[in-house]
Image 1 (cartoon, one colour):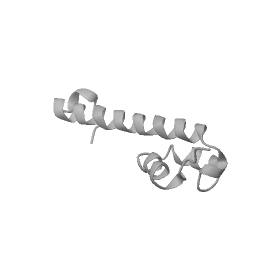
Image 2 (cartoon, helix red, strand yellow):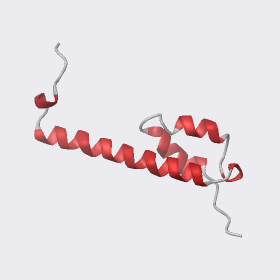
Image 3 (cartoon, helix red, strand yellow):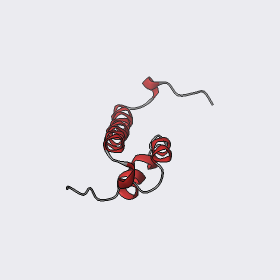
Length: 75
């Protein structure tokens, strides 16, 4: 079986791939910016581990945004 080329995909498949890639890029960017802006006390677990975990696609950024953050306390 030959490896598929971009032109082998239908237009709808190409759009779906682009949309999924865009969603992954946006989620990863949001997670990285949030991770960088929070103090260690506001994160569940080691910051370095979450930094690595964010790059495990597609579950890493979703896991961080769902479970890795503590509520920000505005003092």
